[in-house]
Length: 339
Ligand code: ATP
Ligand code: MG
Ligand code: FE
Image 1 (cartoon, rainbow, N blue to C red):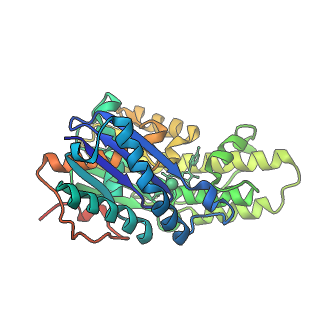
Image 2: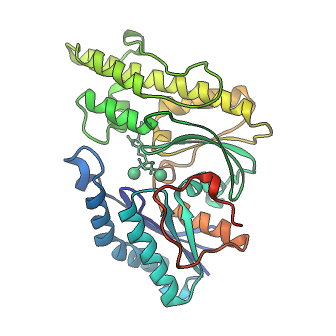
Image 3: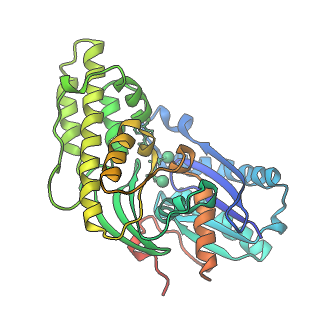
């Protein structure tokens, strides 16, 4: 039967129902931007309470949208880490409660695995074959991962300090833009000239594919203090975006060299929405003779379709979890293969 997916690891409460073949029957995302905006970032306790307040109605909504009742479901998949423990506890407990009540299999989904397997969703029309290289670029994560198979991941590089989305958000704040700043910074950058605001490109050309963004953020802070007009602000935004795009492209080039046999370069996470970043990565993929696969934005950012799909991929291999599974705030991708 259809699989219900639940996502609650950060600041999106989401539910989705997929048919066993991966067809999307219903999906909904409720973002908590309003709740957190005045604090300039995600407040864990507020996030947990918002998930608690909204998840039941969202699950009822997708069931209605799909024309199903809980009795028609075949399995429940809920994000169980990594993420904020309060939200994880809400979503995973809800899912486990439903699984127990309806006597259904339960899958404790790793949020990073869900992002990693998204390009294999049949609804995208181009199921990417293993192995492929994943660049996960979000507010909380920044990693290069070789995706060898379901449950089989090799982390090739990660950030030494800030995640790239975090760098966008912090730089946007320095430019006086409202949180979350990524999209606003991209709009501002469109009217700027990157050449008028050259910025450092941390780790560019360095061996491996680790990332670092704190030095770039510091440079933005210094230049931001000397801004005298609106054009300066736009130039600085453009300079920041160009530096990030160049660094990401360089890191991706190195990662591809470290992952022989790769069939595609896949980019996921909210920062994949950035057109400058996509263009730079498309050039890297093209130079390597590979396709750049970027899921549609709604499936790049946090959603429950990817959680249900990861559940389906695991169930197909006969893998499921006990309702005794405890959510894990830290849960590296390398620890995903069942015993
Ligand atoms: P997690 O890291 O746990 O997946 P998250 O909520 O931080 O959680 P996403 O929802 O995937 O991750 O992405 C949000 C991030 O993406 C924010 O940092 C946001 O600023 C950034 N972002 C979104 N759109 C853009 C854009 N057009 N340009 C640059 N950054 C963007
Ligand atoms: Mg989010
Ligand atoms: Fe995410």
